[in-house]
Image (cartoon, rainbow, N blue to C red; front, side, top):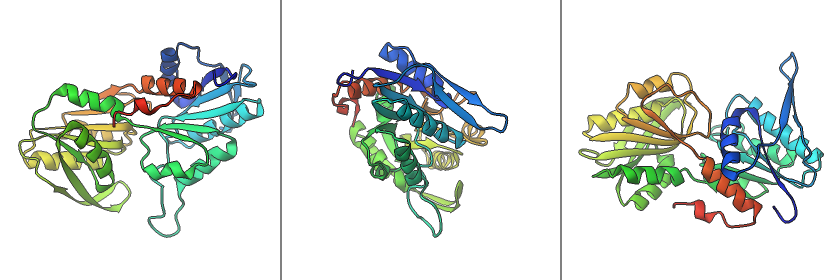
Length: 312
């Protein structure tokens, strides 16, 4: 209960499996909703039960296609128009987050636009995980609970009991995240520096630090084409790394990313289930974030602190 408001949990199409797992962790039924599709591709979501006066949580990752984002917007709008007390968007993977600034002339800032659209739809709070850039939280004028994949990854790495452990970031942008892991695990750290010709195409990469004889774990927020990750792993193997594992919260895995990983020096890629995908690779291991989100939703509902969900 949020004050006197009952809590209800709903899901859009893209995140139904994760939403059901979260509902199971909370010990509640997933709310009933449906979606009407028209022949031209237009769709209209509908709540099939009353949400009047309720604290409504809507779960949906906004990875492409853009229909995922728009479906979430329509659900938020429908909840507000149905007199929901508060509407909280639970977005395990916040899409368009790589467009967080104007890095060249005449481009949009997609992550800011997405935040504006969610606000316009009427969202009262956002719960998300491992934003591509921390400053995206400031794009919202509502509270943002920013969770971290370290809650599942750090214990997993510790249980591996790797000797001569080195933490790495695949690029300079991930140095802060890698440094946090390095301090927590009391390990050494190396960085990768890359130059891009254009998005998803790397022109040059260099490694800053020593990896010979080290067990390396590469930490990132997402893996898309896996080009950067595989290039970094292969270079580290050539420089004498004993083993290489990678951890990425959001498994976008577009194009032939899985084939790249299978053919690379990476021994294991550990990801979360923030984005649904069919795992046909023996190298890829999926850890669920359902419990983290369930605990956070319970804390928000009961007005309790969520800081206990943070490993570091």
